[in-house]
Length: 550
Image 1 (cartoon, rainbow, N blue to C red):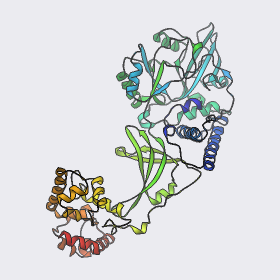
Image 2 (cartoon, helix red, strand yellow; image 1 turned 120 degrees about the vertical axis):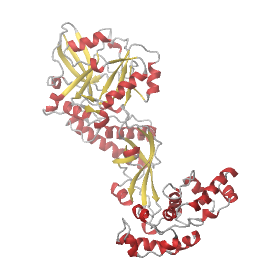
Image 3 (spheres, rainbow, N blue to C red; image 1 turned 180 degrees about the vertical axis):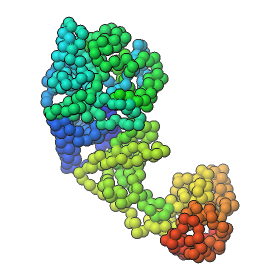
Image 4 (cartoon, one colour; image 1 turned 135 degrees about the horizontal axis):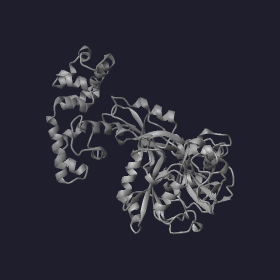
């Protein structure tokens, strides 16, 4: 089963990742550690029928181990799940599998020269072969490697969705389908996978009796040597006593139609968990000629995964304008919905230490509100833990780095970006790169030294043409006309917005003359914040900048 599940590709980032730069000794240690964990999960899954890890996490780590093997052990066989038996029962008709296509354009290309196509939901369950002889269920076989599988006949006798006899009384009839966990109004877009696949596999592999078997459904997606037309096959499947798949089998002429059904089934209530759609054409080939991985008559277009896994390339530390240190993980780029994700913020140093993340670890990432990447979990930690050294928290405060001196570049740039933003002086087209170039050129000696730059100095320091230099210079000069409160924001005085709106001061002299008691009268300011404002405004560097601005 895991052989097929690994092909799903929800978490395939590792197959494309660059090889880690490790010593031979570390290669052995890292591969052995991950291999040991996968063996433990295999043992629980295949021998005890217990899933200790989600399908997605298992698949991601299995894919990662294989990528390491390609890097460091290219002559060895890739590691595959360790099955509880050899799976020696021969399928009368091989399971061919389906190729996964990445987008609508690829689906359109595949459909281009094909006719009489239909689309079905891709049920997220476990594949099975059912063999009937003279109308009686003779054998149920797991997919295995596509040619041979395990004997599930005894379990099949206790699954109500599998007819024990069918009204075809002569010869052999073979059906292939998906055993799934029956759901009530499951909306894939809202509820996700529910780990349903693992629950089904666990029930089929468990040695002890389980009530889950009574809650399994069956979706027949192939009748290899059945009637020649789709309509007759659908009728025959229904007449045989299987679940009617007619409502889930829709004729399609183009990729637009496939996309319509894909979106509808993703959002609508369904009786099963799905992970995409499958587009079928007529095989035009006798079942005896089918072979694994050679079924070019069907393709899958999967749903975008709600979560993806990626490897941490490095751990970066950012310093905000107030001196707060934040941690950002730079990742192997992965596709998440319609976004290309290569970075995710995890917040404070404390949270980073709690999460215990170093380069080489694997993390799972999702999307929070407004499509912002969010760390969901650390799914694997490398054995050798090489921790990057974070900045000294004591070095950075709300009163540090008003100048681009050594160790201050990051906070100084954050202050510049803040003062030029919409909340302060609202410069148009002046972003991080422009500020970076001005700082690198040595043109800025303190937070407001850009006010005195000439057009010529701007042109030469950041290598722009005269027109661009004039636009920048003009914006800097027009900033003098901005309301006083915007300059208070630009300086970074820690006055909350509610208090700033209520502030009647219209000059630096008025602001500096305020007492702690007067600050306390403004909304949103308590004793602690009033003292912080006083400390900020009386700091020597702040006083110097205010004097220059005046």
